[in-house]
Length: 212
Figure 1 (tube, helix red, strand yellow):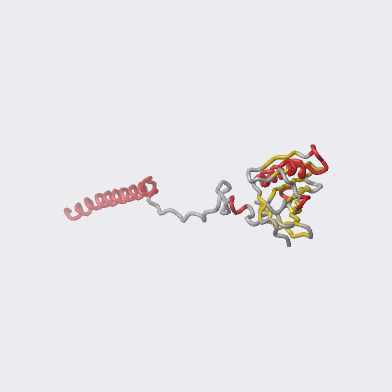
Figure 2: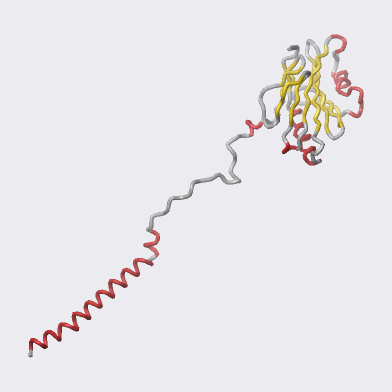
């Protein structure tokens, strides 16, 4: 009788203890899975490859956006910082520069004239008369910081610049004529003209007398 009583006493108690242990284990595992600290300890995934953003600067600097060499014209070299996207091709009497479509297209013609003897101006006033040519007062005349006298004339939808300077041996005249494409928008023409104005203000004429 006592043996039967011991078996009955252990059975329920053992089951109760086992159930309690299982509940504790289940409760502990559940808490570990949703605990914020455990989530923070999860190893991070590999970041995606870095791509350049639109606001990041490109590798090309502003210095590399312009040419550094000069253009050989008749008896001199004209130093122009033209954009590298402008394609310059040697022509019979100078250079033909093709402008990209992004600027409205068109072209820039660069030619030179070397004057000596009686044809060469002997003073700055004569130099100004030279760049005015037959158009007279229709040509606005200015002087650059680099010592050039520049005449500027509107030609159809484009612009013509006449750059002149005196040397001991003579006078060099360089003419730049911008002719926009027929399909060019006015805003593109204005932007290109403003850019050429700035380029010419910083231009130089060197190597006088280097006639080919």
